[in-house]
Length: 215
Image (cartoon, rainbow, N blue to C red; front, side, top):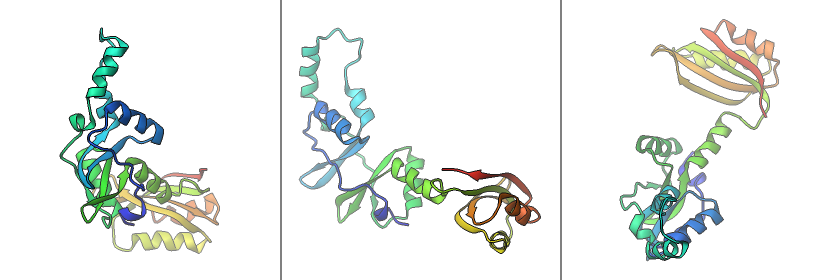
């Protein structure tokens, strides 16, 4: 899965000369939390809703409403935007985009094609991918089991489940308790909970959780 298939588009971009009051209203209207700043088709920065909040006067100010509005009208996006922008290409694997966002503690990345912004990939887009990966919108028997990290273990698990009529609708593996183990979380349909438990019991080091779940 590549970023191209999951990014948000069309791009809601803003001008560096836009007053922050107008930018704030645009964010509310479009229900976005960040936007690329583009000038003459070129990416020059990025601004977030937190940037806009931080630029607003404190509620403890002694300024009148008219004075505050006047001052805000003088502050534009270019005064508060981040000029050092981390970007990715549209053919970037989705997990690489997630790693870049996590490592840099940012909630979104402009997606580029030939030096032009063609989309945004955000934490919300990644949450949607995670929901699909874990089969969160489908009912089934959900299992979390600890297994040995050895060649062929996944084949043993999948064969055991399919042998009782189970059909996998999600499957994920995560870091186990130590370097010699893996934590599997999967969801299946077409098999009863007790039958699934029996099928994987001797293959697993430990079955942590099994339940009918969850839509």
